Amino acid sequence: MDDSIWSLAPPRKEAEILAREVGIPLPLARILTNRNILSAGEADRFLFGTLEDLHDPFLLRDMNKAVVRIKEAIRRKEKILVFGDYDADGVLSVVMLLRALRGLGAEVDYFIPERLKEGYGIKEEHIRIILERKAGLVISVDCGVKALSFVNRAKKEGVDVIITDHHRPGEVLPEAVAIINPVLEDSGYPYKNLAGVGVVYKLLQALFQSEGRESWLSHYAKLVAIGTIADVADLRGENRILVKHGLKGLETISNRGLRGLVRICGLGEKKISEGDIGFRIGPRLNAAGRMESADTAVQLFFAETEEESNRLAKRLDDLNAERQREEEKIYKEAMNWIESAGLAKRYKALLLGCEGWHRGTIGIVASKLKDAFCRPVLLFTYDDGKAFGSGRSITEFSFIDCLDECRELFVDYGGHKMAVGCVLVRDKLAPLKARINELAEKRLSEEDVKRKVRVDVKIDFTDINIPFLDHFFRLSPFGVGNPKPVFLTEDAEVLSHPHPLQEKHIKFSVRQDGRSFEALGWEKGSWITSIKKGDRISLVYSLQFSQLLGQENVSLSIEDIKGRDD
Image (cartoon, rainbow, N blue to C red; front, side, top):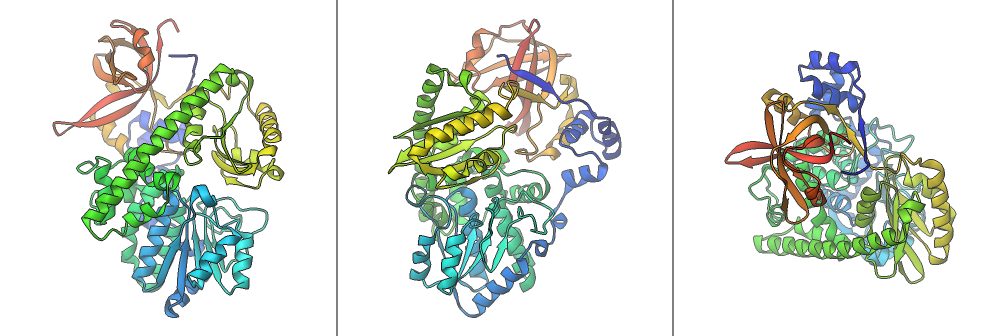
């Protein structure tokens, strides 16, 4: 209950046609048109797409070269080293490639740099690792598209490099044997939004096809789903198909380590959803690289005993708890700083730094602050004369474009529209702040930095019936590009005084048009004195589902409320 702007998507005429042709309730057809799905064919692919609808992996530039070189390495018994990133997407990309290559008879090892010691990506000095391990072929996953000096040095040492990545390249591409990256202008691939695990999946798809092993591919969809969701990738197109298939696969888990991870997350008997991955499984996998070494997460998937699986899963759980404590500490300090100095009233972008902040958690805190203040946030921690930054942005402001315009200030930087990382000499921080503030002031309006509640469609409670819910479930999985639908219901009556849950949430009952629901306000504890029994309100909400005595229970997760006089 604040001065947020409710933005109701205007109805499009295509929705009525879509509802008739596809046979779905009109409110759900409006949700599809809000996601720019305007024809029955597009809706059919969105709702019912299968693995058969995936594009040919050999459309990707250099895919054939990569497959030929990998098969040559396997035939020659040449050592292959997989070089990955330390986040969940990178870790699972490594796991997938290790399993697949070993299954094809390759001699294969891996290396993931430590975030706090070495930072992101492949650097020229990493050639030492390659030579020590006597590798003749390096395959990068979730990184490498900017590794010019490393590839040049590897060539001089007689080592070939295959790059698989999904990040934006620099002005010049490395002279690798093959570069498989759908975002390249000449990638040849129709779908640009694959996560790192998705790019590796396409490589495996091509490899297995060439070896007559297509049946192996389905085993990897679980890891693709986890990595894609954890990397907050767009959940339309091929990503949506892969995630849907992977979530279905998670109903039966054969990998001992993944079973241990699911148990430690408290999901042992539960059907795993995209939310479970985003808020439970993904953070624990990410915690290894953030707080310690990503090796712990990789090793989990190759655990040989239940005891080892439980030990490694417990370690990830402990690291995640440590990450949460660090995150809470930084968040409180940053909030105090922003509010006491009135920074959100003065700037359209927030840039803060502190010596003691943990480098592995500042990105998560930046995301929370971005949500709280509705503007781009870039947080820094300092070490050895350098500033290490991690930023998150709003849809109206491309952070990577902003950093591109400041490129001369950085030692290193990268990312995409919504999330970036950077390193610079600390003396360059003041000019960077000035430049980013100038760009934010120019590109963001006052409306852009106000809290907006985007509403898909206005409905009555009576619209939420069994046919509606049956079709609603087909809209999932929800995430970036396909957010959980948000509904508006007007003139509802509060049936009960709100009561607190864990001191920061609230719960109450609400009725409209003769139908009542339980309403839950997550992180809305401050509303408890603003709502009382008998109030007439309009509310914006998403649907929340839980199992109760074997029945699917529907409740309302409240985004915002306005009284009759607001």
